[in-house]
Length: 456
Image 1: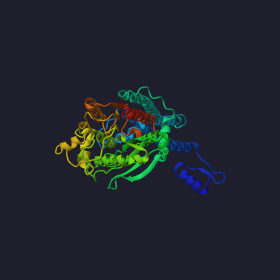
Image 2: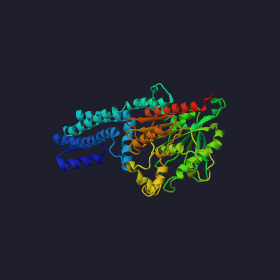
Image 3: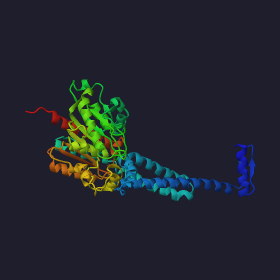
Image 4: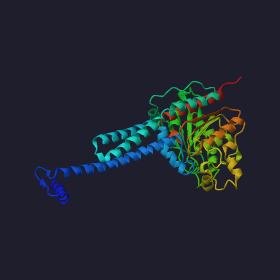
């Protein structure tokens, strides 16, 4: 023990505990043992209490996250975003979260056994809350497999049968696929229009011509989300695009103008313009301009659905009305499909930043921008995917779109409502994401086969 520390201890003891002898050479403190033990116990108890409070708070938050993953409370913008952020790890990675809380509970047990009596209440609280959190989270574990069943049942209208097999190491596979996605990017920052935001990337295998025996590959157009106000083509759907590219698809992911700098309908106009680029240029990358599917999540899901339901609409193609903007399939994820319903505070966002007018004053614009109100008999095949506990874009949005499509469309309408899935669930490398990516591939492959099969 250093002399400075020894002196400090000596002064503290002399001032607070009475006469105490300190040996400089031996580094020992000699004095009333009961007083020394009391101070040590007090310090340990204080530290244990602090740790106990931290563990208890963590346990309570874990319980709330598990409960919120099953039955979210905050459903109105913008507090719904906080609910999503808190509950997504619980709903999508319940095993990892449960193990973390189990470790905290084990720490509480150790404190109960070895710690002072004064810390027992805090230790018991840590054990109880974290054990409850671990149990509640463990109950969400089966949702990934249940989602696989839901996705398979959703594909029934296309005649796709057979339950998707379990995926060993699914999270690792999705994570590795996303990390290695860069190898499929064959063109970056390509301009598809005159504005600075008009940029796209192309994903494909570099040996695509060998894989498809020289024939053209089906094409997927990916539209990012972000409440029409933010987001980037480089931040979403990487597991899906990597999976499809590895299996012989060409994927095109696009940026578009964002609000409030740009007002509606700039976003849908840009997506249509990107489709025009695909028609003209995707063959240069081995893609088939005659088969293009569109997908996206959240605001991107809305734009994907609206693109599919408004082919060649001149109102959304100013200056390029002659371009064919039809698509052969659509896969919107957790989209906002009905602007005429003020679900979860939607109108505040649309009026304040995106459209700039109110629904009461501009109903025609709101209806025209709503896929629910644009569905018709010529709609292409749809696979709609939504989580049943989505707090940002309520599942009712997709339910209404599916109901309308099934009432009027001549093509198959597939719908997968995933148990306890939050908004943006596929942004995490999980088994549920793996099952969803594979289901999308099976859907698109079935549609492509039907579309390109010889007739007669």
